[in-house]
Length: 184
Image (cartoon, rainbow, N blue to C red; front, side):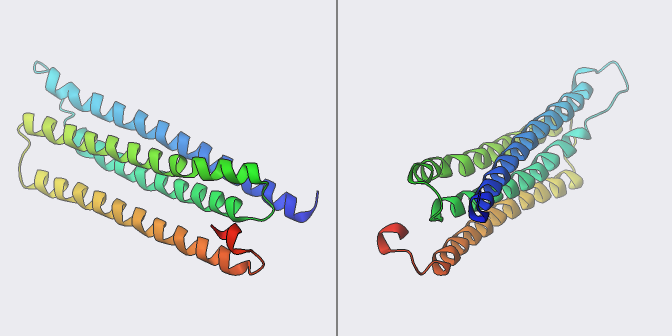
């Protein structure tokens, strides 16, 4: 196999690895969030004991959002590699078609699903803390911080979209031998 073929195989392996890491991150996020929210609810249900685990409600959404940053980073790697494979003259036409059809689904859907789950966890934690009568100055600072993390996550996603656009333009500039029909 020539160096170009080996390079493309390495890219495909890198994309598969990133997809596996992203799936693992989603599973880990779900496990952490479920455990933290479950343990946090123990203090709500056990009124006869002195166990007070409501503080875990503060932690669950922040961990969920931290995982979202990692999931977004892996999605960027997947998008960048997929873009390069789609734009490469070394890639067979069938593979280019496949990459085009799956590119939007493989990057956007996991990100949006993960963020929606994080927002639901945040809302659930806010309601649970409200029910525990834990609404004070620290509650509002925490809620503002979580909202700030959501805003930072959105900005990070926008930045990654811009980086992918610039990467596409860079790849197209590096290949002056491509015809106009290949660029579309």
